[in-house]
Image (cartoon, rainbow, N blue to C red):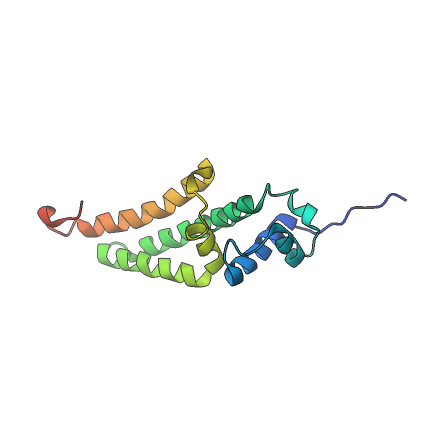
Length: 151
């Protein structure tokens, strides 16, 4: 009878979850892929079936974070409409709530040194999120006399 390979389930997500735990406790530079594999309960070699390296793993965490962040920001903006002030306040509160609720994603997105320009998907997701903040700020600035608006 041939030996069957170890089946983990969703190994990719298990590695992401393990890395999130490590990022939250040690920071984005404070762990190795081998440590992430150990936390996920797999061999270090298994990591390379899904990620080229630690930076690739952190970039995927950032990508997932930007999906959540973008959805959170868009929902907050819409919930504040039609008031520009309420929409702006809601997006600000949502930003802070995201950082508290998803600290590992937040750190991967904003403190890891990963460039959002490393791939088009990550860039588009980051731009979507920031676009909501810019839209909220622009809506609010329309109530400021034109000669007193920020550039």
